[in-house]
Image (cartoon, rainbow, N blue to C red; front, side):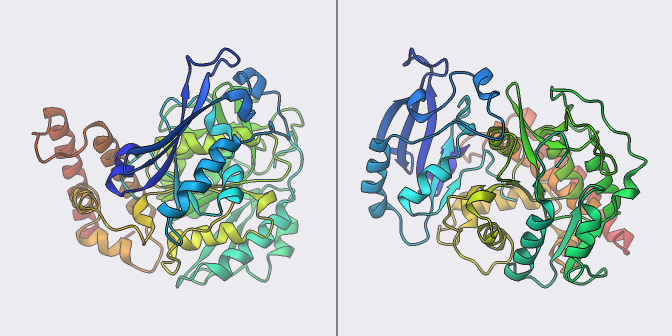
Length: 458
């Protein structure tokens, strides 16, 4: 699917993949750097994974705690990009990164941090779907300072009629946040901050400590995620952002939480949440974006890098990863959310602190393609972007969570359908596709009729 987007939008794409048969020094093989425009290759360079700084295997990657390998991009790759990109990219036009499906541990590498300072252009990551839409077991994160700066930046930068930031923190941090955020804590219906008391989460059971990540698609078990959903009481959230340590378990990335919002006593093990639970959680809240901030003293930067990529592979929509040590004042992060949500920013921020997966149609300088119209027609037909539910989603107030979550579920279903069997005017859809389309049409029509008949939009 990323390959098709690159061709459809005439994008300049740096493709990153592995050749597992070309190296004897690494179990992962060689890394292939391929620059392509509209799918046509301009150069292809192979480099030993050891030259980039990649661990020989995942077991070696697990050894890095509060640190990461010393990564680098071969100078010949940088020079080729510096020679070719000025003629290919206009002002504000990004270079797109594409990670191959079978790319091993390449998602562990902070590519934007390595490339952007040398290239001085915006860098975005191609999505995997065509549809647009501090625990004590780890070193303490200065959450109060970070949230103070982050909330101010978002409220100052994102220009919308109503910007509400819901803040959830544990019992240790909560009293200090009450003082630090008091000038921004506001009642319902006003732009500002809502701060939630973790004492209300006492009834949620703490999960058992484990080093592995075993999650079932569609299930929510972590008390933090359950508390947040229940606290919002039917309200949706357009974007969800986590300030957490990362964790690397086997071949999965995860967030590291305290045992529960009300309990933070286990000094040996945090509680881990992987991509499956985060995807389910974002669908429950109807969020179109999931963001992560990697703190300066992150237990596993590699784990958080891998988690962001794994979330992007599970759901359509934007996924964002910010490096706090490269963006201590959070201006790049605020600019990224302004670019995604308020419509006043035409181009993405150009920063080594940001990894952002988003659809090319988000960049206004990129011309709309015929497939955009086709995909919008499909979304209108098989999701809630029609009739009464479209009016609800276009309203200025908060969208009821049942509408937003239903829309995200239907978008994910459409995205999986298009990924499995792209649209084509020259071929007849398979019986399986026709059956799925019929089911999606029935479900979306039923939900739209419910919205029309309910009246109160609860």
